[in-house]
Length: 473
Image 1 (cartoon, one colour):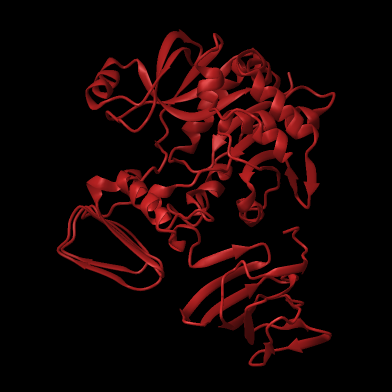
Image 2: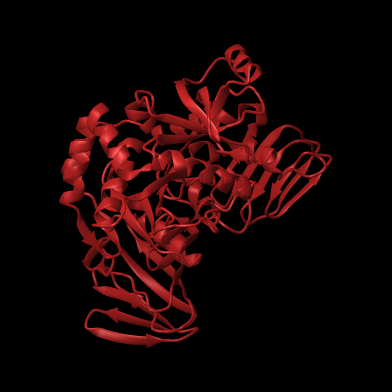
């Protein structure tokens, strides 16, 4: 018998606010390199290596993150069908769109299995994870809706739980889902041996899932079907129709389908799973040193214990501290009691109410053509370091409120300035007066780096009038 086709469905949404200040609205935790040299998203993809029958990955992403998703796939040599959600509608509509896309791709071939995975989890034991997927395949082929239940190693009030039913080959019938418990109930769940943590990972046939939606949540099925049928292709992305998709009810797979089906199966997973829900989780995934400190970046700690210490750039030095979280980025520093790690979300909510920009972007802002980094700013001026990838170009644009000086520090730049075209090399510069149409391009084979000095009455990113753009913005 031929191996079934397994289409990974990677859910790339989520904000990760509890991991602020590294995680921001436009650069959430799935894109961060928290464990090793790869991001959480990239590690989600890499742990699939070796599974038989893998088809092309389907990624479901927020439109604002589309180029980040594409770039991170490209960095590890993978391609994906990237579906763009025009509105956040939770996991049930997102996976419905992936299921319809997968069935459309297969045409007359066998309907594929969908392996639904969040993009921001850590799994230490890849072999155990893959064994669990293999154990789930026969059940999914037979029409079951399979989820993976993490064997709990402690009472945990931050996770939902799954109660197992009768034993089946490699797993159990799914008895029921239960909400996040209080501490006493969580202890009872763990002591009983009958409950698993809800991992949010699933395996099922694409048509089985759509049939379950038709039965239990037809509004989702109908709206998403319209959104996929009227989707439009944009470069490497498929944009779901915004009106139809926004009309879909917002619901999770758990609530929409899994809590109602009689065909649920749970496969036990003991693989060092962690959803990295807050800063204190880093210590629980083997990142702590002999003093119990989790350190990343340029950190020096003296007489410090059981703390999470992360620096992006400057030296972070501690003396005589314990049970603290200290996260230093170029534009923000977080100091928190380790026991209050979950409350970082409350802090971020307060920052958003205050309209602080530190919740939106990191100090390095990624764009499809490269990135820019703020170096200095003050009244009526701002200095940035701009990196343009080989062959890439910024949009043809102008500004109403600012002028710009550009100095090339590495590579070669082709610059459109009004009706002129300039070729600048290292240590050469030019001036873009206020209101003049301009474009920056890298014609070379190495990164182009320039220092940009902006001056004017308003320096916000929304003072950009795009006249032509290769990236459809």
